[in-house]
Image (cartoon, rainbow, N blue to C red; front, side, top):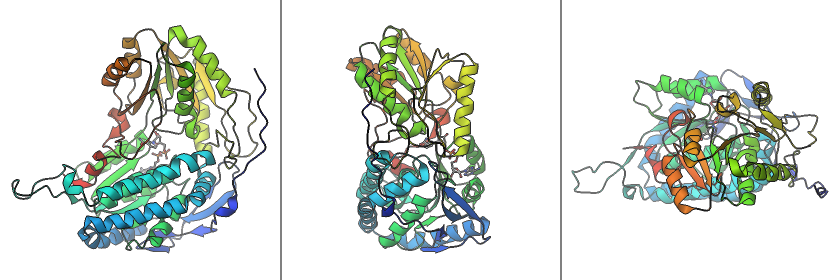
Length: 487
Ligand code: NAD
């Protein structure tokens, strides 16, 4: 194999972001300490350095945030849609203006490469606010909601009230945007809880809200752990619960909300199949496979974590994939050359390690390119497992790490059967030259998103969500409005 080019380090400057030693909760437009005085530390996963200390919200703080959101709801929902849109457009523009600062902050707190925060997360965050700003004055034209007078006038969809939103750590600011933008466009107010390992970008977003002049109480941010999330979703003053995270916690939340009047949407885990037929352009498919499972260190709910390759091209494809993986640069997330950054936490690293070890123990063949991992921080080399059977844990369970499980098939029927053989149903990919085959496969795959000759492509206008244990409800597009309207 040809030797790799040497790259000089190209670190992004940390000086563009000013992280305070501690942060409070953002309630009613002000930062305040947690009533119980408790705090959480947040660390850089790439270096284990403590970045800051954030407040840990308890029951009293949840009460205060929900009350602030309730007070703000009346005036906010009464604003004409065009007025709410102005705030959302303003937020989108401020996010764009501050995108370098926010990208560096997200990379520091999450561990993902700056190339991704700069080129994927931040542009998508701004795009999401722009997109839903555009809907705010057009809700009556979204074909949602009831006609007030038996069809004598158009539908008038109403907001739900106070939305409790709990998000995970893999795309902290993007998941915040997916939750907050449609909620506000529809006239709801929100209390959002970011994940305990990545609280900082949500707190910076609180500052963006202040800068945009958003009325106090419309957006409230409570940092804390699972107990804060549990108290928030159980709170009586909440009208809507939106959760993104693990299927296990999603099920607990569904039990909490059952029997109440709260409306619920759940975006949970996945075990996506990336299916490569023998007529696919191999080099493009390899890029799609890499993007499908090594983007964001594989910590992506819709990751293409199972590669299903047609048996006749298996050897050619795997040779090309191994060559490509040998060129991935693993290391400092702030270096602009880095392709694969740090795993978000020690706990997540332990989960990935345990599942990868089970793959070996159950008889699959493990391979990683030669790469030097930094000594400090949480790291896992890009990994490929071949000789994987459907019974192996690495083929059934979500690993949420840079680990690909390769299975083979001979016929389209076998590919469909294997792809659908999972309790999840979030995403799938199909690689083939034949348009008719793409359509036929998309019809039969039980997945909320099916990508054709591409993978992990996102657009605010396109609805995203799952089947079965991947959850229910859609985020993005016109469909995403429905989750925040009384329809
Ligand atoms: P997690 O479920 O442990 O945590 C998610 C959030 O829920 C965090 O903010 C956490 O503090 C909070 N939480 C924990 N226990 C809670 C409880 N009992 N009640 C209320 N809130 C609680 O998941 P994670 O480990 O942070 O994230 C990884 C998981 O999220 C993966 O399984 C992944 O597939 C899934 N995910 C799904 C999507 C999607 O769109 N479907 C997107 C990103 C991540």
